[in-house]
Length: 407
Length: 135
Ligand SMILES: Cc1ncc(COP(=O)(O)O)c(C=O)c1O
Image 1 (cartoon, rainbow over the protein chains, first blue to last red):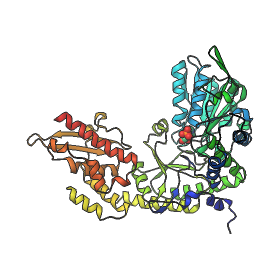
Image 2 (spheres, rainbow over the protein chains, first blue to last red):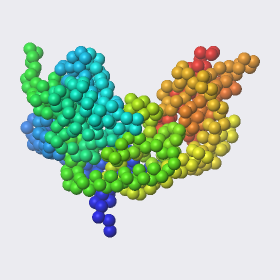
Image 3 (cartoon, each protein chain N blue to C red):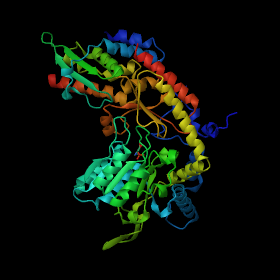
Image 4 (spheres, each protein chain N blue to C red):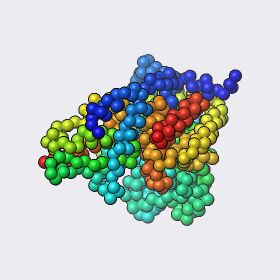
């Protein structure tokens, strides 16, 4: 029998019982959003059915219970990331987190200061910095990435020492290519320049389960929906002194100490960054996702993802004309490829007729695609609930698609 | 290529692979646009793939001559269908056509994702905009 626990875990995900266009779903788009286990779906449902109340208001029992459950998830996440609860801020997602940080750090940027990014970044980790640069006169510089899409670590370290950036914001893993960047090494190198370091963890929270003390970053952002949790929720970690020093981004109720028309004082972080009624059900659901992940042997999940990734790579490499982009030696299990001169749109449209859910296009990384000299790719992104059958189905569909295109 | 022929051919295929094969064949039959005509001004915005379109009237009969191309095989095939619908019409007749409805009738719209559907819509809107300029 198979002792791989992931074979069983797939049963926790009800979406795999669904058929799409009369075919069983072959879901290979987990980098866009992960599927949700029953435990998360039930937690959200139970909350609305029997626990729904607003948090941090009133002392009636239901509200107190909701507040306790809500705050317990903050503590759970803090433990998951090996940081303190007060260093976690809930937002609506990685995008909102990056906006909050880029806006907040603008106060400490001035003309000609360097904001260091990489060509691998998602638009969400580019545009907020462009706005910050416009506001302050700071300039954006890029870390070196080669023609295959791999960050050049030694050159990158040298560049950090040369430029002494005020801010460096880099993805832990690339959403377009799956590359894992050695962010710890880059952060270590930036320490002597006093750089504020931001890690975009949208693609790493699930696959790499990072220990933020080891990464030693100042900020880390994520989206819950990319780690089994509900959509519309994300958050950030901020090293407390830095976090608490950021100016208020959005304001309203729940984040204030006192309000009068002669002046308002704010609560300390994290409350000062969480105005209004938060996504309570989302947080509760994400708590169930964290419990689910904590109950698994992370190494076993990672090994399973990597073995699927290796067989996918191997089978793709056997097809003449496939060009795989990115770093296949350090990868979260995402394959981005082109086939000869065929347009990704044609490939994806035909793959879809086989029930394959894969992403095509520029993956919100237009500068990266321009750097690679392509319009877009087909992206297959895996998670632990995928199996060898998914890979086989994909390869059969791809071969069929190719022969149709080449008729 | 006339429309009833296209309709008939597509209807023969139950499976989508077969329909797309026919669509791509229609695209192959469409003459390629010379690179010099693939200008930014000719690009249709709102399509996931690149689509170029030029519209004119033939001098003698004042009927529509549209030439179009795409960098993808499938969209090029969809363009062939749109052109079969519009080309050779008098501008005032063409102004009354709705290719989106045609796609619906061909059973294509339902299975085109919103972005692809919007691509068709953007192409058709561009044709109608230019028709107004001509009239
Ligand atoms: C690396 C990376 N950063 C940021 C984001 C933005 O996440 P969200 O759309 O959930 O805010 C994504 C989502 O695709 C991503 O992959």
